[in-house]
Length: 92
Length: 439
Image (cartoon, rainbow over all chains, first blue to last red; front, side, top):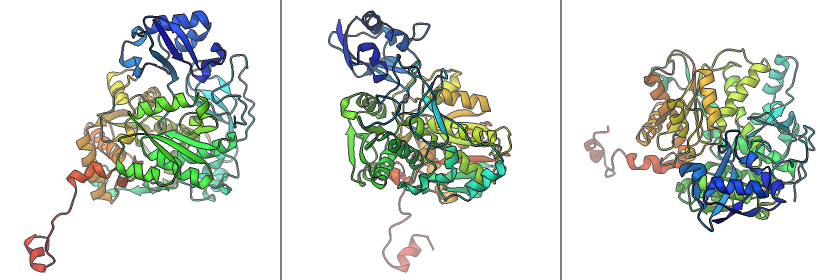
């Protein structure tokens, strides 16, 4: 499955400044692994030492927060849009 | 880009650029930004998430040293607004001379009639922040963000908002000479929409809930469309949040430079609660108050209670929820500071509790009929949770207690309108009045 991944500013040094990059994978875990293959170092910023999503990272597949879905096993259909977003924004 | 800070983009240094603590801007005692998770320090700049671990950044200070009594006198001689605490805030020393809404120093009401109703004997106070310029505590945080926006050279002020913040940003932008463009969920209470729109900046309704709005803003900030924009609760969030410390300062000063024993604080993102705790700790560190234990309690609405749920389950992680409550100003299903709220409630011996919408309305009416304070739904949540925590023995009624009302009830008329109205409608005659039994 080919998906489009939106990269937050904080991670764009790994993508040569690109705000969006293509990636392959049937689920989020595979997409992140593919990102790492092409943009070395990025996975360690998104995942913690145990391989889980970091506490302060939100990931959306299309409009769905993956924490409400299957987490890293959330399916990433062909053409899906994946957004990685710092979680500390908002509120007061 | 219109940013003149130490950073080239609106989010952080690059991996090739070692983080330093040398800052290109001057914001009073603010020394650097520090990650709450891993402790990495960054220069002052319009950044909000740690380059290393995505953790939230907060302002680290070189706080004043010396005689606490001198500092107290300096504060007490300051203006009747938050700028009296400028030596403890990330703002320039001449902040009081700049155009700003000058919020704060709101009333701390000794609520004896409410205390009697709730059985509190140790002294009950309501910190009534409806008295701020746009009638909510948001004016405090926005005032600090305005100064950061000025320092970083932004020309547009923006935010994601559940309503109150949109109004506070709109008003502050006008006063300070910024353009504003703010984003809200499309289905907010009518009063809040009007109070946000009246200032004339751009107000954009997003088809989604607050978390959707927040996500949109987080994406906008990384897009060329958002260049030159200071989002008060995104890329200016570390500074903005510090405004809530002034609630802690004021409460203690108004109590005669004493810590309260117990505080009940509403939770949306949880930032306010964490910053009040930070403010209390700073006062202790500076010797402005005597060090003694205090307990912090968090209040949520049952229909959006991710932090309360985690607290009761003994979890360290907050699982996001889809909000469904009349307390829309607290309807953040994915609260950024939730884990820190859990830490603080547990560290201080407090708790996090929630009440349902019916209890929120009852509590709004309770505060109104006992103290003449008309709170918005968030205030109903704190009063309702206070009542519940007293009933279940978590709050000690024999010790002093401060409850926050963070906004004006006029903002959320819809919540109480269905159950509030005239006692009677009569003809303009004495007979009719007599018949109504009101004489």
